[in-house]
Image (cartoon, rainbow, N blue to C red; front, side, top):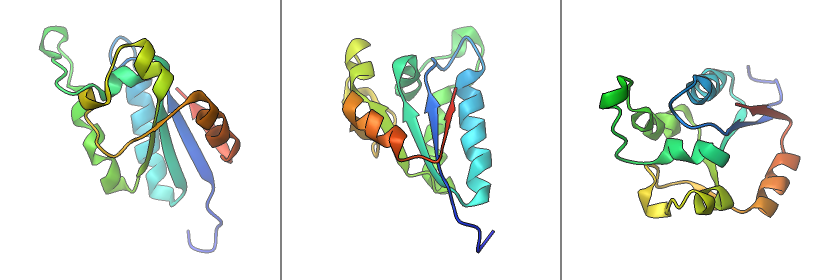
Length: 124
């Protein structure tokens, strides 16, 4: 892929981790995109912030704990991870409850700026 200019791709995950495949689809898509040496970012907003909650107990719904996958993102060179501040506030989630330490908490104004800087947006 050398010689090919990289593009800035932002994946936006807006859905809760369980009840549909959208959250998992977003994670699968960004992990697949990491093989193509693009500049990747991941934004959690709306109900997507529920994906970041630590200590999820999924035993009763018979699904894998979604949050256990998230700490591997840096291994795939996905280091630009953003969380929408107002989405956290609306859902009464504190920063201390998040499974990832190295996220950037950004407000709505910063989200607009972030979106404007991207070559492609992929919303799930």
